[in-house]
Image (cartoon, rainbow, N blue to C red):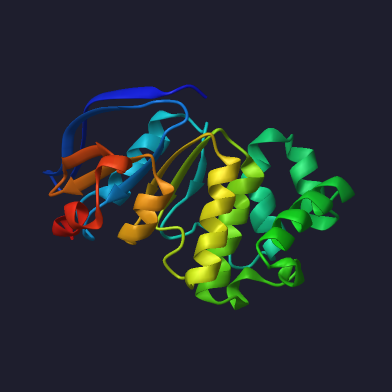
Length: 216
């Protein structure tokens, strides 16, 4: 997927505008970190971008969007649900094809989750559930990653492992992050959101943590 442009992007809830109007572009190959305090509009912006790129993205929403009653395998497989006919997906619920099992198992192994393959997602910890949502995004394998606080429940080493995996797999990404140091090391560009508006938009190479902290 090539880069994209937005002009006059807005969002309202209960008749009150909470985001925008925003005008900005994302170039192919950019890794963008959205920064700012909770409630600033980062999650809303990610949802709007996802709606407008029409499914051409791997998404890790803040609520994770997992199906608790299904095991980890099926939650990851959902990442490619729209790429198979209905009969294939129905059969996969009962007896998954080996190539799908192997592909999902490989991703889970990479995320230190292989032993949870058939475990119901409802029984997992917060950090494990987050990794399932990340595995689903990796399995979808789109060119664009949209992720809303994808490492918030992970400790330092695992957070770094996950961010490295995401950086390697996705050509272009827009990721909301609370960790300022992680944002600076991961992103090529930082967009700061404050009160529904863009308050900062600079290459990460030009910024320090002191430039970003006032947004929180």
